[in-house]
Image (cartoon, rainbow, N blue to C red; front, side):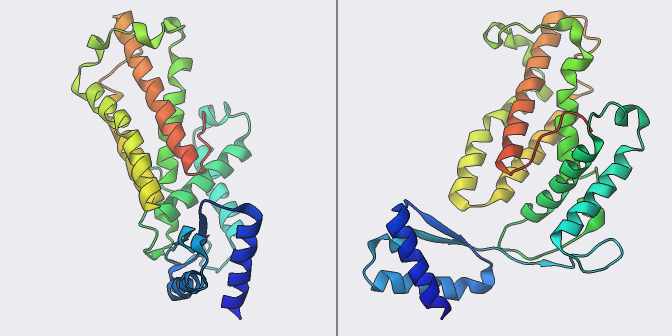
Length: 264
């Protein structure tokens, strides 16, 4: 019955869309079913059967509220947003600068959930973990958002060196310190990270890349000073580097359906 329905559905979609590729995102529990389904279509003589692809994934165990009650995803999202709101309110000064705290808390909460879900290889099962997911330390969603927020604040904190000159007029001699070259190296690796993720159908590769970039940026803050740097040309070169890092970090986050934030 299921196979018949799937066969009819595939034929109908081919007749309507003449697709280049049709992807079935279905859990690994259905590996055999999808393999048989694709094979039957091929044996039936449909040349487009080779354009079908199954992207499988593992399961989530222990998905519950902090009290241990099994729930639906919308409840997890709400509780995650509540946790983020509690964390944000601990810094009253920064909290008062946020235009829409509820929106920001929800986005940070969604980021926490999505990063935990996509961080491991998609075929692997994983245990849902509230403490790890909502932490601002380690390779987590909140940490990634914080890295982007920090980069977004650099222009607000250094208005005296704005506007910046065009990028092609920057003297890159000012960016030869090891911390600067490390960030540049990571920025240059972004296209390869995207191509690999596309080839393997693994979002975890993008997350690994973004975390490494974020760590590289974090380790450079106290070394590549912008605020307080007496050499204005050097300060501007460093600001350009951090702004480019923000662009790449934000692009990678958007690839993962995340919304990069500017304040939190």
